[in-house]
Image (cartoon, rainbow, N blue to C red):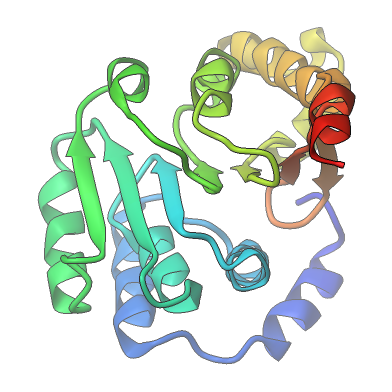
Length: 223
């Protein structure tokens, strides 16, 4: 828990219900112990999609399709989602959920490792949601930035690791130290990379929102 439990409970109490399909998917995922984005994170994600009004959305990490469906309900007409998942047991359920929601035409699910799929993608994605293996975020970053146009938005989930990210490397369990180090490096990169404007938001399990800004030379040429 990054912020106190009472604050989180109050924020969640204000949230209206999601669509019946998304609510059922969330219930089933929690029953099965499948991680999905938290309610306050879901609200932020939908708000950002509604504000950006993207043409093409890319999601790295489908799980059972919950977040893709949330985004599909907030995106404008004509927008499409491409989502990537490598865990074979979750792929059939995600496809089933997309069909149940009537969104199979708007959501394209690519099966396999994002490290292999991302370099093969073409065109631009003006909204990207990163919610895959946390230790791979830093590795995926240049691959997704290649696909982001100026003004594009990158949202990354679970970046504060339930508050562990502020602890010393030796204060976290040994099995989590590699992820801890890589996530710290990822956050540093997002905050210091030229061409990105990033905010770290302490809701849910921590979210970053990064915007691809025009470099000075490019902006001058368009002036």
